[in-house]
Length: 192
Image 1 (cartoon, rainbow, N blue to C red):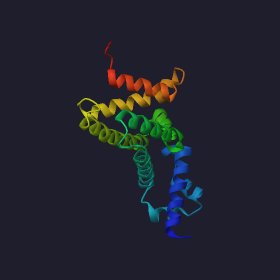
Image 2: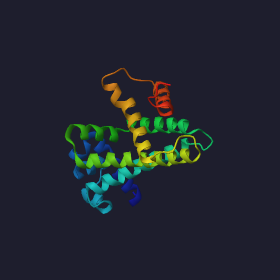
Image 3: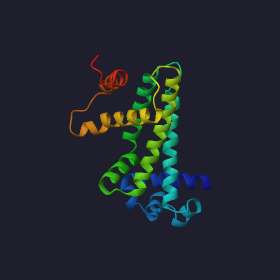
Image 4: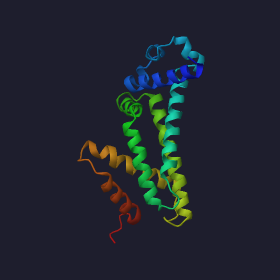
C-alpha cells in the first residue's frame, strides 16, 4: 500500500473514531486499530492527535467552501444565494457525524479542542457570509451596515431556527425558515 493511501486511511479512520467517541475519548491506539496499521505509522504522518484532528477539520472546511462555491450564482439575488447556501451548509453539518459528535461533546463536556474545531467551522461560514453580504451591499441589494454583524446575525438566526428551535417547538420546514428570514431581514421588526 502506498504512503499516500495509508495517510488517507489514517485520516478516514481518525474521522470515524472522532465521530464515534468524540475528541476527548479518541486515542491514537484506537485510530491505529480502526486503520489496521501500527501506531507508529500514524506518527509518520501526524505529530499528535491535535494535528490529525486539525487536518480533518481543514478537510471539512474545504468541503463546505466547495459546497457554497457550487451553489452561489452571481445572477441570483443575495437572499436567494444565502438561503440556498445556508440550507446546504446546515444540511452538511447535520449529516456529518463528526460535527454532530463535536456539538454533543461541547455541550456535555466543554472539550476545548472540540469547541475550537467548531469555532473554525463557524468562522469559515462567517467569512463566506461576510463576502456575500459585502457583495450585496455593493450591488445595493441590501442596505449598508457592518458586514461582520450582519453575517453573524444571519448565521445565528439560521442555526437557531434549524436546530435550537426544534428542541422545544415543532420543527420548521425550510420554506418557513426562508420566508421568515427574508421578511425579517427585509423589514426587520417595523410594523409597516
